[in-house]
Length: 265
Image (tube, rainbow, N blue to C red; front, side, top):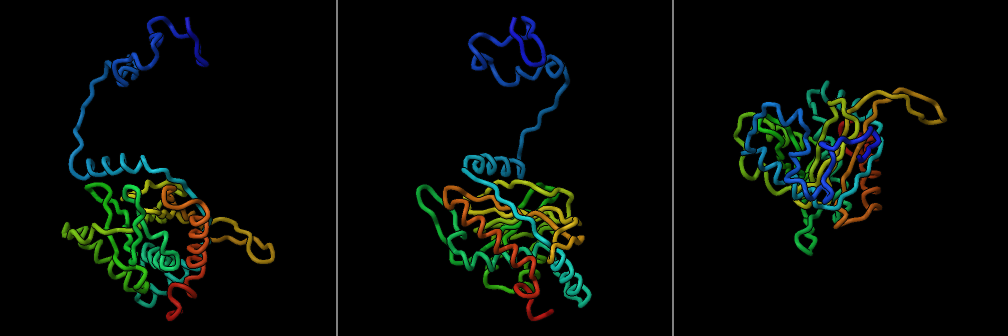
């Protein structure tokens, strides 16, 4: 009789001597309880099938995750001031504005691979992951490296309106060179996104929450903080460029009046 850390295996439970390869299919390992339960199977179609196919491709890409804590206090204050002035800007638009600036200064990160070639782009088109009834979709804000915060916000909100009205055009969902997943309104603090479209980077923002933080002169203050994550495509870049990318994003997000909206505050 064989044994496991949880106790001995009875003869009826023992794995064949030939090993797992001798099992007819993985489903046979589900156990007696599941084997006797009623089940319902649905073939994946439409958006769910597209997502599944894309994720299978993405899973083959060697990728690594990096993260940095961001003090979002100044940005949230900036957002509230703009809202009071009648110029409310979404958190996603702040992230896109910072992303456009950083990639403009680091054009090698605005890229993707195809076969044995790396393709570099002279315009930053950001795909934004958004959830809707059909599943996960990517809407694309074009040319964020050449547009200011308010233009980016107007275009992003226009995309969201067309998404809700189910009037998205092909150019609204194609042509991304980098992808952003913003979960700053959720409780989830850390997550790893899968790279899409063989791009160099996918950027994620976790939930914003209040925490005690050590500030100047070793004082402790309650600040609004969040994790900024980047999954890098190890085929294209190594760890150091990704680390510098996060640091440059941190600088812009923590000093929005200086970098993102200098003419308004």
